[in-house]
Amino acid sequence: MAARSGTTSMSIIILVLIATAVGTLVGVALDGVVPGTRTLAIAAGFIATVIASIARYKLVFLGAGMGTDERKVPMVLLVNAAIASIAGSLAAHDLAGIIASPPSSAIIGTFAGLLSAVLMAMLMITYHTNSATTR
Image (cartoon, rainbow, N blue to C red; front, side, top):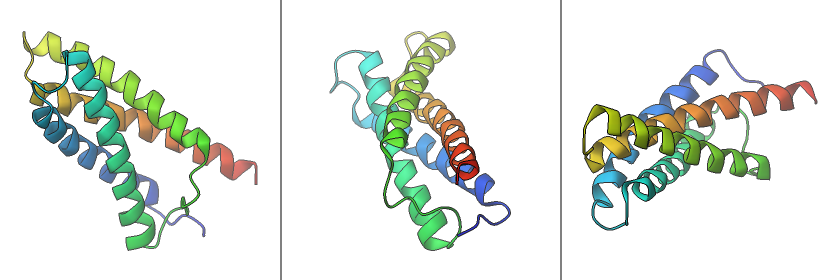
């Protein structure tokens, strides 16, 4: 199915909004449960990225009938999700430390979800752009 106009923008907006909200919730839920704020950031970023990616697929492809079918997730996208969540979460941890000292778990989770989603969106765009040209 060919991508319709606005599909990429809609995918990014959904991914970022949901990942930011989920990151905040996970950050608050894991406050005091996991040892260290870096572990909290990585967990919040990874969970937020995975949940937001699933929600984006359900809303964009299944709900609106737009975008590419990603039922068979290539291994490279799973590796991209892990890379995005680790890099975004560690950057979020450092950013939260600059903003507040000590940073709250909600701030760490929010930034972890946001930055992980932004990196995931960039990796998804790159993957889909390159895979479309090889077909």
